[in-house]
Length: 140
Image 1 (tube, rainbow, N blue to C red):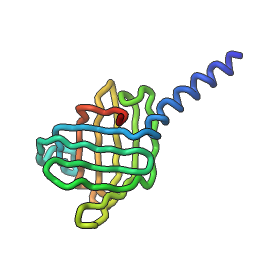
Image 2: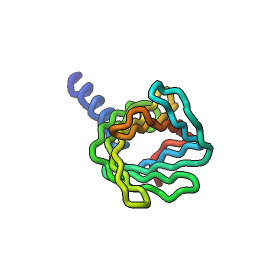
Image 3: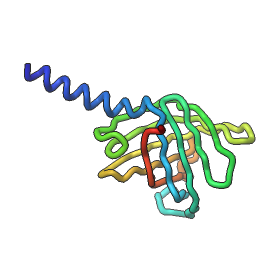
Protein backbone atom coordinates (compact mmCIF):
# COMPACT_ATOMS: atom_id res chain seq x y z
CA UNK A 1 0.00 0.00 0.00
CA UNK A 2 2.83 2.37 0.88
CA UNK A 3 4.50 1.78 -2.51
CA UNK A 4 1.19 2.48 -4.25
CA UNK A 5 0.85 5.84 -2.46
CA UNK A 6 4.44 6.84 -3.26
CA UNK A 7 3.88 5.85 -6.90
CA UNK A 8 0.63 7.83 -7.08
CA UNK A 9 2.30 10.93 -5.61
CA UNK A 10 5.21 10.69 -8.09
CA UNK A 11 2.86 10.16 -11.02
CA UNK A 12 0.81 13.18 -9.99
CA UNK A 13 3.92 15.35 -9.63
CA UNK A 14 5.26 14.30 -13.04
CA UNK A 15 1.92 14.67 -14.83
CA UNK A 16 1.30 18.09 -13.23
CA UNK A 17 4.69 19.37 -14.39
CA UNK A 18 4.38 17.87 -17.87
CA UNK A 19 0.73 18.92 -18.16
CA UNK A 20 1.92 22.50 -18.15
CA UNK A 21 3.75 21.77 -21.42
CA UNK A 22 0.61 20.42 -23.04
CA UNK A 23 -1.21 23.74 -22.59
CA UNK A 24 -0.76 27.02 -24.44
CA UNK A 25 1.58 29.06 -22.26
CA UNK A 26 2.40 32.75 -22.43
CA UNK A 27 5.55 34.44 -21.17
CA UNK A 28 5.54 38.24 -20.96
CA UNK A 29 8.69 40.31 -20.40
CA UNK A 30 9.26 44.06 -20.46
CA UNK A 31 12.95 43.94 -21.38
CA UNK A 32 15.09 41.95 -23.82
CA UNK A 33 18.77 41.48 -23.02
CA UNK A 34 21.24 40.63 -25.77
CA UNK A 35 24.16 38.71 -24.30
CA UNK A 36 27.76 38.11 -25.33
CA UNK A 37 29.32 34.63 -25.29
CA UNK A 38 30.39 35.16 -21.64
CA UNK A 39 26.75 36.03 -20.69
CA UNK A 40 27.55 39.71 -20.12
CA UNK A 41 24.84 42.11 -21.34
CA UNK A 42 25.84 43.76 -24.63
CA UNK A 43 22.63 45.76 -24.92
CA UNK A 44 19.17 45.91 -23.44
CA UNK A 45 15.92 46.83 -25.20
CA UNK A 46 12.84 48.02 -23.33
CA UNK A 47 9.41 47.03 -24.64
CA UNK A 48 6.90 44.30 -23.94
CA UNK A 49 7.61 40.96 -25.61
CA UNK A 50 5.17 38.08 -25.46
CA UNK A 51 6.01 34.50 -26.30
CA UNK A 52 3.23 31.96 -26.73
CA UNK A 53 3.93 28.25 -27.04
CA UNK A 54 2.71 24.75 -26.50
CA UNK A 55 4.25 21.41 -27.43
CA UNK A 56 3.99 22.07 -31.19
CA UNK A 57 3.85 25.84 -31.84
CA UNK A 58 5.95 28.86 -30.87
CA UNK A 59 5.13 32.54 -31.53
CA UNK A 60 7.17 35.64 -30.64
CA UNK A 61 5.49 39.05 -30.51
CA UNK A 62 8.30 41.62 -30.22
CA UNK A 63 7.55 45.30 -29.64
CA UNK A 64 7.19 47.39 -32.81
CA UNK A 65 7.94 44.44 -35.11
CA UNK A 66 5.95 41.82 -36.95
CA UNK A 67 5.42 38.56 -35.05
CA UNK A 68 7.53 35.51 -35.79
CA UNK A 69 5.86 32.13 -35.85
CA UNK A 70 7.30 28.69 -35.79
CA UNK A 71 7.16 25.15 -34.64
CA UNK A 72 8.55 23.23 -31.73
CA UNK A 73 10.81 20.48 -33.08
CA UNK A 74 11.42 18.89 -29.67
CA UNK A 75 10.56 19.65 -26.06
CA UNK A 76 11.51 18.38 -22.64
CA UNK A 77 9.64 19.64 -19.65
CA UNK A 78 9.92 19.17 -15.89
CA UNK A 79 8.19 21.54 -13.45
CA UNK A 80 7.85 20.63 -9.79
CA UNK A 81 5.65 23.72 -9.29
CA UNK A 82 3.97 24.71 -12.55
CA UNK A 83 5.02 28.14 -13.86
CA UNK A 84 7.32 28.71 -10.84
CA UNK A 85 9.97 26.01 -10.34
CA UNK A 86 11.23 23.80 -13.14
CA UNK A 87 12.62 23.78 -16.63
CA UNK A 88 11.51 23.53 -20.25
CA UNK A 89 14.00 23.05 -23.07
CA UNK A 90 12.89 23.34 -26.69
CA UNK A 91 14.40 23.15 -30.12
CA UNK A 92 12.38 25.47 -32.32
CA UNK A 93 12.27 26.68 -35.90
CA UNK A 94 11.08 30.28 -36.35
CA UNK A 95 10.07 31.97 -39.58
CA UNK A 96 10.51 35.73 -39.81
CA UNK A 97 8.17 38.00 -41.82
CA UNK A 98 10.51 37.74 -44.83
CA UNK A 99 10.04 33.94 -44.85
CA UNK A 100 13.53 33.08 -43.60
CA UNK A 101 13.81 30.26 -41.07
CA UNK A 102 16.11 30.17 -38.09
CA UNK A 103 16.72 27.38 -35.57
CA UNK A 104 16.99 28.08 -31.85
CA UNK A 105 17.47 26.29 -28.58
CA UNK A 106 15.19 27.86 -25.97
CA UNK A 107 15.47 27.15 -22.26
CA UNK A 108 12.91 28.45 -19.77
CA UNK A 109 13.94 27.95 -16.18
CA UNK A 110 12.12 28.81 -12.99
CA UNK A 111 13.82 29.00 -9.61
CA UNK A 112 12.12 30.29 -6.48
CA UNK A 113 9.35 31.76 -8.61
CA UNK A 114 11.70 33.75 -10.92
CA UNK A 115 11.41 32.59 -14.55
CA UNK A 116 14.08 33.31 -17.16
CA UNK A 117 14.05 32.47 -20.87
CA UNK A 118 17.37 32.03 -22.70
CA UNK A 119 17.48 31.63 -26.48
CA UNK A 120 20.51 30.72 -28.59
CA UNK A 121 20.49 30.62 -32.36
CA UNK A 122 21.89 27.30 -33.56
CA UNK A 123 25.37 27.75 -34.99
CA UNK A 124 25.79 31.16 -33.31
CA UNK A 125 26.33 30.47 -29.59
CA UNK A 126 27.87 33.92 -29.10
CA UNK A 127 24.50 35.57 -29.82
CA UNK A 128 22.09 34.97 -26.96
CA UNK A 129 18.85 36.53 -25.82
CA UNK A 130 17.58 36.58 -22.24
CA UNK A 131 14.11 37.54 -21.03
CA UNK A 132 13.15 37.72 -17.36
CA UNK A 133 9.44 36.99 -17.18
CA UNK A 134 7.08 39.53 -15.69
CA UNK A 135 4.34 36.92 -16.14
CA UNK A 136 4.50 33.21 -16.99
CA UNK A 137 1.17 31.44 -17.07
CA UNK A 138 -1.32 29.35 -18.95
CA UNK A 139 -2.98 31.31 -21.76
CA UNK A 140 -6.69 31.67 -21.11
